[in-house]
Image (tube, rainbow, N blue to C red; front, side, top):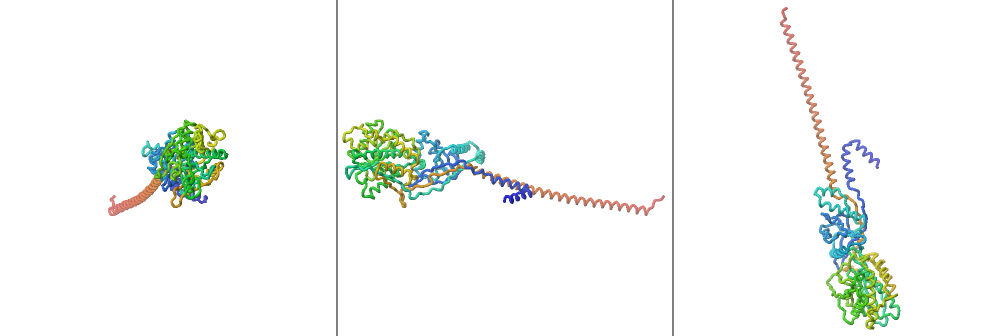
Length: 597
């Protein structure tokens, strides 16, 4: 095949070299004009949340990306992939990209978020709920910064900002000659995940002394939440609550091991799933125990439900309640015991009760205890946060360094001491407020708390990523089984006809940045090639006309020469004839009149 092609080219060049040269050059330019698409960088991107809750869509609704990169400083962002660094991110810039119908947004995050200035962290945490509040048509991705990605951003920023101070012609020339980056994702369009199961776990320590014993329920949700599921590690919210629950289970399992300290309270520990999605796991657990069974600890005599949420930092503790406890009730007793332990043993901690009524009109419940309050179970949530609206409860900035192990250990001991005083009725027995039960070999183990928090924050725990067979669920089940009895799993799946929640896939993808010439370069090159071919065609046409005119001139000149030559021949013949005729006449005259000698 190559020999035949070579023979064809040889014949072309031999037969008509100028014509072949004129045609061959544009063909080569057309074939090699765009720079070969070279993958400048391949990196992992994490898509913004996409879910439906109570029929309301949230987050981004698209996952496919194949468009040219720009920074937000560019004048035109339509159908472009807008790249931003977190240090330069603002809600106004984000809205600018959306208003101009950008093709996508990619936000570059630092590898170590703990090194960011606190004002930037706080600003972004406050913006996350606003980004998720309404659905976004374009895909929004997050990427971790590295040297190559930073280089791509710098080059794109230079290209975007340099156009503002140039003239129109300079902008056109710069746009045509500059190198750009085409951002392309490898995944498909997102679709709803069917039959996804949210898993919750429970375990118990049975009390001693009778049939109708009061039950204390300790609850913590284990899933995390943030603007991007694969970046949601939930260190403080609610890794701290889970680690405290496991530590409380360990401590009270030891107390319940000995007959002397085996109390007359049932202790029920519950790790709920789907906490960040309106506490779906807790809702189904309550339905199963209160509506679909005849025998349950929740149906008998519930003293109170203590929910643990965001307890890994701060020097304050707030007991959030939907209804202030009445004097003489177990929940009022816990309130007073917490106040006593804090005031006598940890005076640096500020303790208060925060009252907020349940607002059923809200799409999301404020705290987990409200799920129990709706079912008329006495419940409250303990947290170092004074309000449920604070951004650190649902942020990708909630990473391991946000948890202070000293303060988590201190708060765990406060809760353990207060619960013990309630269970063993120490105040009624006139025990002093500074009495410490958990000391020496029964003390709170900070190393144990730290190990659990480290493990929890080693992987994202968004509800969309934790299925019933995940390592998170199996490991939590293992830890509960070490200390508790009758450990069970509970599953909740969305109703197929009227789902309360819907999750979507394609949350983690690979993105390629290809180094390419802009589209206007191809257009400009096509115009140049067309102009070149037009000039060549015109030149050929003009040459043919000139050649034809020259030949016609030569033919005319030749014909004129022939005519002139014929005229000359005719004149010569006439001259000769006239001279000959005159000579004959002279001879005749001389013959008729001879000269006299």
